[in-house]
Image (tube, rainbow, N blue to C red):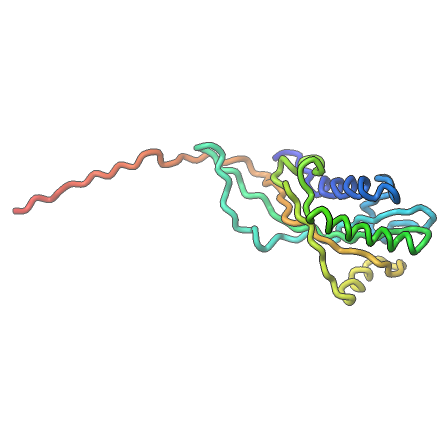
Length: 193
């Protein structure tokens, strides 16, 4: 697939999802892909939707190639998991806690999938319908290590979730093949002397 923008479109899908269901707190302009290190402190309520890791999905690496008609094979997509850190910023700590609670409720209530009309850009065309959302249960030590990459930023209550299994289309073209259409077996009987 030419001009694939799957990673960007996954972020835009999250942004629209949060913009729709958290509209009483945030507009889509208040939702940022910036890391917590880049979010300024202030009186504006914001949500950092920070993609902190892209990793190969270990379970879907050896799939069968997709047959297209009788004479072509589509190269396998790379399948990855996207790990996000969601961090709310607000003037009042209560607002941040309410946003955390609402995000947990949203992912619980929507059966942990993004699908159909919710998907932005090329996600649907690249075979990413639906996208599953799973909570990442990081230990306090792992969260401290993660927050250690944001210099001079104090730890904030955050949520980690993973979008899985995201298909990144191959940059190779479809491959022509010739299939066995007819099999002919000739049997000859050997005569006895």
